[in-house]
Length: 114
Image 1: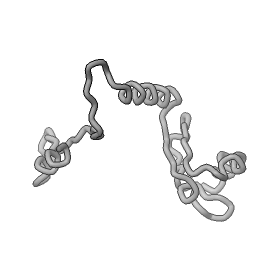
Image 2: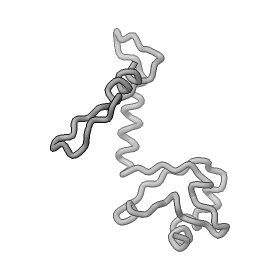
Image 3: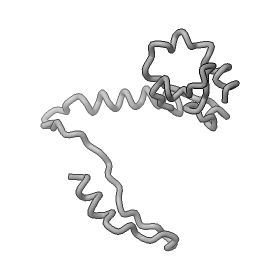
Image 4: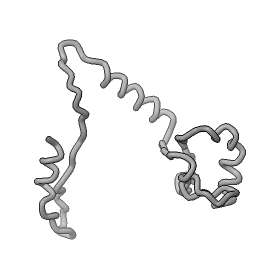
């Protein structure tokens, strides 16, 4: 992991020095690399220096930004709310019976959804 840090991060250390967040868009085999665990010369992990985010592609980032802009703009005749929205999933049904239902999961999901 030290060698990976040396090859992938160190060439950009001056640029990254003042950045609290780092967005990584890995390619190919780099998806399997645990970027958070990369260690610098001072033995600090990359996650100790930056808040890390990973994206599957730049196209994904562009599309998410576009959707965020669309969701932020009020639609004609739509009365917006200040409440954030979320998809709440709880109490899934596992086909095949290999796991039992988690007691209280449905009630918790309903409570969180309110």
